[in-house]
Image (tube, rainbow, N blue to C red):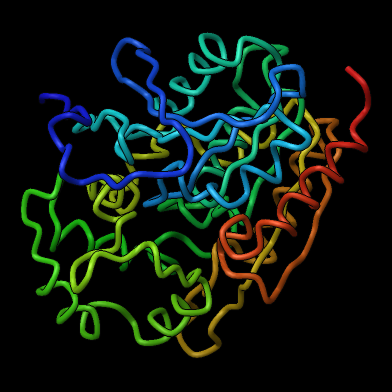
Length: 324
């Protein structure tokens, strides 16, 4: 199926405070922004599902005091190429391996939110030797974004119904685009307790709106992402337990708002306590350090809700890493 480039969706985008750049990786063009002195340590920032690079826009000036920070649009999001039928962890991860080779060109720390946190885990296990120095998993849905996880609730007990609704009503590559229909259907298609949790996970952002229509981040997102997660294709060849057992660098995991609804068993939040425990066991069994920071009142995106705390958390952890 044909790729969709940014110039085919030019009317979708809005201006930002940082210059946007593009690198051609072969199959895809990856859009990104960069901040910080080139002599500072490198940091790769990986957004979550439905998030473009500019989700880090308020955090970038703070991180730039300590790092040469690169915030990317993953394929299927933002101004990067949309690739129908080509959304898997291995595909995303290999894009980032090439990005490190061609753009960063030296060992780097990586930090990702949500699905980006799972990709930070992928890089911490499967990047080229020496490419990654340490990894921050910001509220990652480890196990909880799989259809048949090794432990804890699956995607069908977590955010799966939301992703399914996006896919159904918006369509792959926005081929349906029935935003109003989706809004009307949400109360009947999304469990009420999950709808309530979305408010606790969301970061209010007046700049991320477009009148009565979809928010800007969703306008820049290919809903086939959601279908790939719900169908189990995204991790079909990359189970999380095996991935975590192969981690080769120190890890920081931040854990935000979460609970298990006692009546329905739904996971409200990104990752359950039992899944954090299993991730720790696997990473430490691989010989790596695992630092856990709990922020139970924090929305899903710390870098969006409290960029100062996010910057302090990342820089403080990075300062304690052993010299390489």
